[in-house]
Image 1 (cartoon, rainbow, N blue to C red):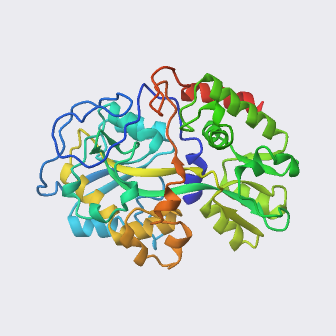
Image 2: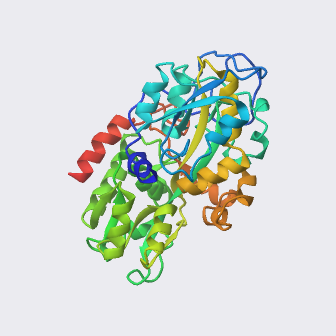
Image 3: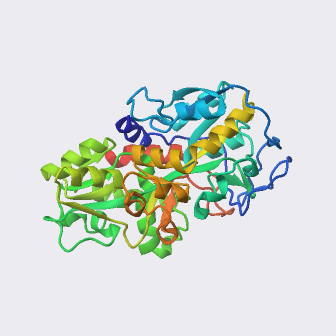
Length: 404
């Protein structure tokens, strides 16, 4: 099941309707419309739940595979059944394959909660599909790591629209027997890719353009890139040019993490972007690899549990939010899925006591180096108003052009 998730995350980002990112600073408790965000985005006025009542006896969960396991895939992997026993809320779980599918399903009104990635959350907020979340009604929320709260992908104008669940960074992996000295910069796969002809891997998604933009942001200040997801036409062209040059040295573009593991084991690839879980898998299979977070930082992802605006079971929905970020459940999900948990207390409950160290779960300095996936939109996410940025449709066309 984890394999399925890793296959689909790479294709989850799609073109969206007009949205703008907004940076919040605290969780509000107003039942009115939140203030506009940094880029002028004002969400629909939807009241948040003011107090918890008795559970309705049911909750309909829409989740990425691996986030709401009930023992159906592995009898040993089940954090849904204990939730049902504790709360009396019978859980119905449906998984989705892409963020686009999640947004479409949420619009049916059939689901109470959804695990949304950063490329879906703002769409759901803007569409009025999810409600502001009253975090005071989620007892485990105070234990969520602070640097995951009130971010552009889970809040607007200081109002939280969900509870953080887990996160991860995109890393640079290399064969220790082929790459010497160890890389410290993304230059190894961009401007210096020619040192490894035909042995460089790259992530197969238009969102990988952000990786090139991040490198340019750090190495070509004259381009004026301030956010790798906010590229005007000139900035996008520069990223495309960099990726076209890289292509001559690319062994393969990957979206299947198991194929990347095999590519590094065989030596067909010796350096390229990766996820921590891929590194762990490759090392377990005796591949001589290591991974680093390069000096420029990296792109990454962070997921949020959100409540449907028209939830038929809001009390059970809130109980699910509290349960899934509880130390025990959050630890189970993080280890099963392969990510950093959001609840800092989960780190004491993982089976692998080094899990949180491996994934830098509470490492704020590390997290500050990560630019979490956000959907490129015409309104520049970096706050510029004197230019229109390129949207995801433009990125998709560019990616097709890059791959040829």
